[in-house]
Image 1 (cartoon, one colour):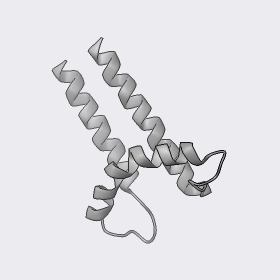
Image 2: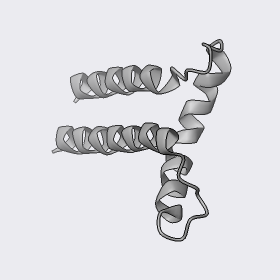
Image 3: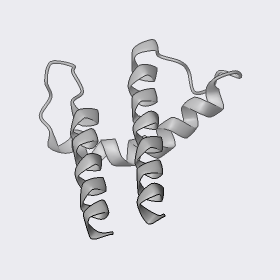
Image 4: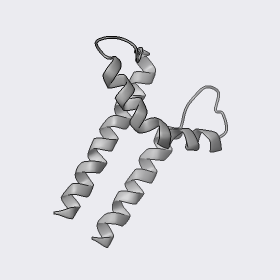
Length: 85
């Protein structure tokens, strides 16, 4: 039961992180009437976790590697939690 909850939360977070990556490619305005609330929600969930990683990583010619680092960190945390359960 707890393992299912952990996996569900992990999957939801990964989907939000993928959405964040795609949104950075297409540049949807957070103030758009149609997509704005969704964009704002995705940014509110992901930015507090991505910003500290961006501050630590050096600039790589305009490429943002923080989502990749966050994917690995989330996977490690999920695996640790599942091994505890």
